[in-house]
Length: 584
Image (cartoon, rainbow, N blue to C red):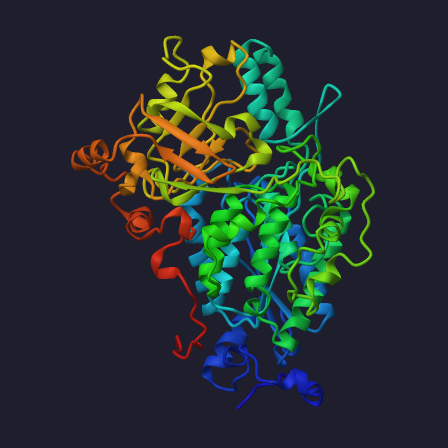
């Protein structure tokens, strides 16, 4: 028997009476239905909230420990307004929040834990659709991974970027300028007092990094993939239009439930290719690679590292830090992602979106209002600036480099390696005046992959040796199995796979070895005789584990390598079976 509260009339609409997932939670006139409705009513919900209308979960990563997401509590209210207006029943629920700047050893260690939290929360509770509220780097991919494994109607609202940083009449970009200033202090070009004074001017409002870091990259890609509404990428966190966007998202998710438009209907091979193309055009984060690969594994799309090579000839159009000079607030006012999508429209694959229409609707009528921020496709900021995939005996399963943030002449050369076996060894020695390195040295860092750290931290953009900084050196070739922040820059080769701690060839590199890189030809080679490498392999032993209990232990035992998205092996794929067992 189905419970319809004290209200009638909704039964006259066939779309509204189609059986919903929430019915077995709230629609039954039995003991279990009684318990669930009664306890929900203790919060003040009236009878008619349970009349069969769609129940919409609002998956919120709000936390004061995640400053990027600190505005999501307010945005949730906007989403609720839209859901009520469209005839739905909103229910907000918390999941783990991952603060990139606050967590040790790295937020990436916990991305998969967030995905588990999201997946099991959606599966266990009686919702028909879900709105994902995220922002900081790992929250958006973690939420999408979890939601994809349940595959309900799903839509994203990002927290939005901070306002531009300001200090002594100049614009400040979070992350990017921090690194530049730290180097300037090391070089004696900036006082420590001035460095400390920029701290308060850097982060002037809530929101994610206002550079094209990982958070803004993922917000941009959710728009390019059609899993968030247009303009999601760039509206500042404190802009009233982001609240309006949240409201309209609440309305749209109810319609998506009525249309049975699931996440898998939107996240397809075509939408992934659009994301890869768009990532190149905006100068997006290298972290997008590992997140898109992980999401593809959840939805069952056969996406490989090699597929990112389609972006190699895509020009850079967005003049935002770290690949340019402007910030996300400027990007918004220049036209945002709709303007970018209009410029690359001829490259985009036909793909369905959360609007139910093709991605073309996202840039229909879009204009650019500042060509110094968003360049035209035919006259780009940089030609052929997309991510490059490198392979060779040093990275049999691949590595990546971001040419738009690198020094071009460093991308085609041989060099002598100086090796740091651990991040602790690097930190203890990088600023030694007697460090035997030159500007032509290749710095190599091991032990920073998914298993090794563990969690694959953003330390691949190693600091430059102090003695070289004082000589005016501002970039060097750096190679590691770790990641780098989306706000970082430099000639940094990342995600070397397999990682050193898993026995990859990177583990065998020694100081003095010669390495060859060619971004143009996609090469990363260790120029050491095969016989010598065999001998080194025989003497190699895996490092002892950092963690022996809890989630971290499970993570190390089950995490996949970077070229597979660093998901946990037992989480790949999805399970859409209904929950049939009762708790009462």
